[in-house]
Amino acid sequence: MGSGQQKNSIWRARGAYFLSVVSITMVLIMLGFIALMLFNAKRLSDYAKKNIGFTVFIQNNTKPSEISRLENALDVADYSVSAEFISKEQAASEMKEELGKDFTEVLGYNSLPNSVEVKLKPEYTSEDSIKIIKKNLKHFRFIKDIYYQKSLVSFINTNIEKMSIIGLIVSVFFLMITVSLINNTVRLSVFSKRLHIRTAQLVGATKKFIRKPFIVKSVFSGIISAAISSLIITLTVLILKENFAEIITVEGILEIDIFIFIFGILITAISGKFAVDKYMKLKTDDLYFEY
Image (tube, rainbow, N blue to C red; front, side, top):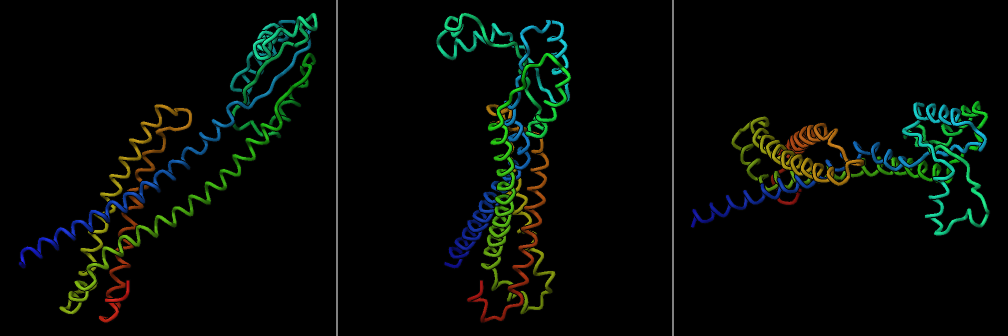
């Protein structure tokens, strides 16, 4: 009978330890994905801004050599990702496809001008930057007009700024939740051994001697959980990168894995220490009621 009870006690202890590792692992995975989101925030921002640019409309009597000079200047500019010349014939053909009919037949001529489509680098997509670029291009006398979608530029930049603030707030909030959940998991593990702690105190064991096995066990849980979490996050990133290469990158994944290991070890060690210290300070009667 005693042997059966002992086996049940061992299995219960192993089950509690397994659940503790699973709980910490799930929390660390959540924290890892938040860190991954922060690492890829700039890529997400750049992806949203990649279609922002402007169109330079050119006067019809402009010489080909002048158009070529403008196109080359825009193509090599610091703010430019690319500059593509669109002839009036090409523009008319594209508009015909969009409208489903040839508007030149109605007008009797092609009223569209030659143009250059410029795609901007993300750091130059603010309205102030575009205004400065427009001002600098005024020395090309043959430029008829420079057009960009102000509403789109304003919408993207405003929402990216809002999302950055919200993302930071959410990250801090989840970090607090993570610390709380891991701390409670470790405390619950120590709580189940609180009577053993009191027994060790009664036989004269020092605080350091009592703390050591609990802290070692907690740290070991943190290492196992961190290893599993890092593996799951790394595999997830590699899978997502295949389909979302422009948004997801493996850059920073090593730093995230290291952060998870350090965080997992530190928080479990600190939580273990404080939990043991708490139960060593309680009176015997309080051990049955205090969590």
